[in-house]
Image (cartoon, rainbow, N blue to C red; front, top):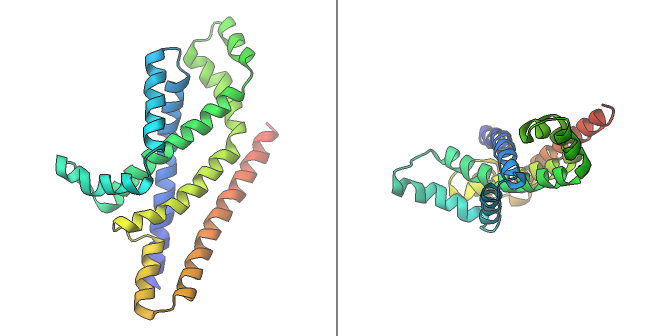
Length: 206
């Protein structure tokens, strides 16, 4: 039972840390993608295309087994954290960019007419409106990220799926063990969806 709890807590911690980091990195990439400087837009586009078009498992293997070869050594957990965070940041960036693009073009023009800089326009006009429109897309990404943490088990991180597999090797009851693990993932996904719904309803009244 302690192994199940350890795996579950590792999955929750990995999800929270990765999603928080993906939000920050994704926001930075979004700023690059909508910047008025073509070079910056190109950098943002390259980031998104590179990270989204390589499977997450390949990134995990590269970070866990490849980085030590160039002198960058992290624990299994932190290597998985970096790979998943940077991978999911590409999806967060696209969700945020879609939200920004959904804001009427006249809003940005009005902000500039008032003398606001590009940065001020983003902070005070565009981002607050865009954020309200991307709650559900971000919740979907968070749920997908939660499921993706199972891949960390393939590179040695003892998260929920790997813990369930270890227990199954001992007691040989796959239906019971993996149904229990599936219910844990279902509870996490349901919690994320519920939280997103509450946030969306709260912001709709603002």
